[in-house]
Length: 194
Ligand SMILES: Cc1cc2nc3c(=O)[nH]c(=O)nc-3n(C[C@H](O)[C@H](O)[C@H](O)COP(=O)(O)O)c2cc1C
Image (cartoon, rainbow, N blue to C red; front, side, top):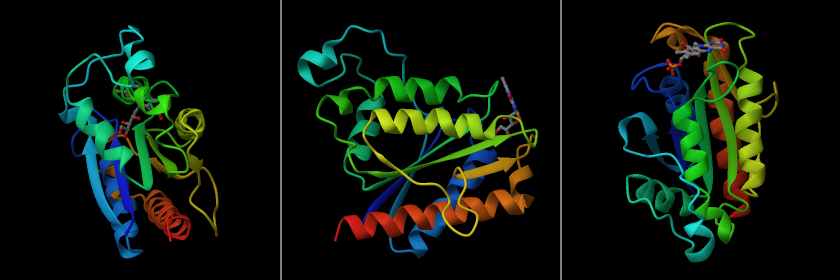
């Protein structure tokens, strides 16, 4: 069985990004995956301080909750990264996660993990696609395999519209793209890990 991990970079614990990632994970489970949801907003993770110890040792010199996150994703075959749109980009929480995951790039532990993006903005064209693109850039640099939400829509991943905490519960398009993303990631991860 494949493991698919969903990671939210929202500071809101039960907000829109959580709603869409959980929908994607539910769909991943229906397609045959084990899933786990990680909320960065609940964890204690400091920013990278550029000591470059990871380049010497393969490990981060900062000891905090990122240790467990790195272990979890390095054992996964699928990865969903979700962030609210903040000024057209990912949140600080998601960017800190990205920078602190550099130890995994030393031996390219995320090579061929099947991955995709979730983003939610308050406005219809508020930067969902640029936020997905920022996540995709990160995944390329980790040598991951990137997929979108697949046919029939086949766009950038899961993109939601909503400002209030629960808005995406009623965002049919956002929920559909999340469902399709979870299935697309799982189907390909299963194919690649037979
Ligand atoms: C600092 C900040 C910046 C934001 N920037 C944008 C933006 O550029 N475009 C947009 O559509 N929404 C923007 N929003 C709104 C959030 O993306 C929106 O409320 C989203 O639903 C939050 O997701 P969450 O419920 O998962 O936290 C911003 C919100 C905050 C707090």
